[in-house]
Image (cartoon, rainbow, N blue to C red):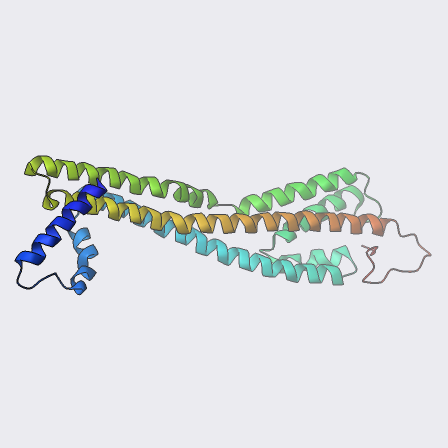
Length: 263
């Protein structure tokens, strides 16, 4: 169908250049072709383009909000880790942990700290170390789930955007064939409106889907990084608690840089 339209277009251009005293149309006139196509498009193409516009606005809203949230979480992660590694007591970190939100590491810390307090009152060896590990895994999973909110919308737009544009493409081709039947002859005037609508909706679907796919992949990669950091921090905190429990009274006191800190 595209080849037929191109052949008809070439034929009409050749005829126009030979019959018109002004010669071929100026190149500048093609700049408003897209606006003219949108102005003369049918109801189906308008609906498809409106849906794609809404999808594009939604996808960019999700991407921008997630990028800002992840940037803030990453900054607070670094601040919280610096404070945690400089402090010598678990109670000191617990007192100031709320200052570092929205760091997901704070949620992991608070969950392990609460479980440690329930088991041993915050002193000595925890009687159930597996309980601390499960608490860390639960906190990391809950924090990651919270960070993944609205990501499904972005993935849905990335997958369905081209198909919405393809629907407009199919309807545009149907209109082109209907124009052929109405005119009774294979002329460019009969098929051009439908083909132009089909190409515009196809391009619009790709314009919506490509940024959504790229944004979804980038954000998913960031989520995996946050998940790995939470797992690493959970293990670091558990090791610090276990090492501190091994400290016996009478032995030299560990320094603030010693991993066997007294919590």
